[in-house]
Length: 392
Ligand code: PMP
Ligand code: GLN
Image 1: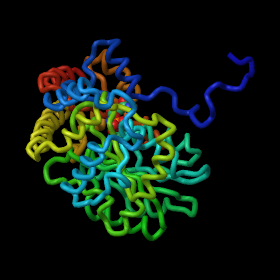
Image 2: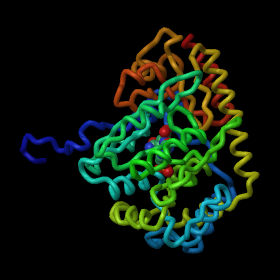
Image 3: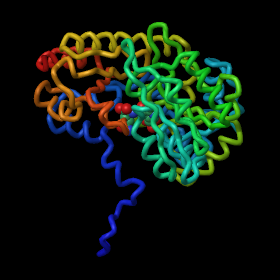
């Protein structure tokens, strides 16, 4: 310990405290409540992919440092996935970078591209690591708020346009969007792309929920819009799509100059990670379309189960077009403070949820919204729905 009165934690990080996901999962463990807070599945992904990881471990593939950019098998599989699903061409050697989850991809991208003083525009509510990484890079975050309109959280394109200044370096987009479940449509993405081109901005797009879109929503990668290939960093993750969140395999796809910049930061963060798991994820990405369709159908049924249960319990429900989260409004229950509501919920109903306010700079805008995750077994969701009747 130093005897100085200067705080140990530097001022860039001082405002962040403990991530809400750790806090709420600890609350669930302590109280024995059903954890619909932190977004992780309670069953593992495909058995054959788990076996692929075991095989890699046994065969000694990835047990020592893999190559810095990721093993060639995985980079090739990522490039093939982007081509097969979206018609986007990336050279596996120069256009793809494997990271320790999307979390490291976000950190490395922002540390690489942001100079102190640069402004970064992010959709609010924003995933919590965006704010922390912008701060670590010395940038200033500029939130543009998604607001409820006709049952969904919507981006106001005029507000987005008005948020751009001469100091804006990049737009940090997330679709499908955590926590609101909004999936940006063609018109919105076209407008974002036009704005980026007009103002010569970089775009970082977090598309980790790309395979989780429901009903008639469609995931469209921003990188596919006119003028975007040279200015867009796209972030993906195996955690969400294949239900192995603990493996921490993520990736960046982008034009070679951008990948090279991101790699410059990434090499000094983890250098490399998840060796044997990289081989397994390469096999996962090559699974037939029926796997992805089955995963989506399973999550859709779970969404409908939880959304109906929450509505029955008296919440106003924003039915998500994507992700595995449902955002609710607690005001119909006579409540207005999501923080207090979530802290009391284990006691009241034996369930844990996340207050969306933590994802806002404008905390008052997020105060009445609470997020529930539905990536859980059907029996667990049924039990949660039963218990939530207690809040009525
Ligand atoms: N971005 C978003 C929007 C997320 O919800 C998450 C995590 N759930 C991540 C990034 C981090 O992904 P990973 O676990 O691959 O680091
Ligand atoms: N992304 C997950 C969520 O939104 C949590 C990931 C984490 O705990 N960092 O719940």
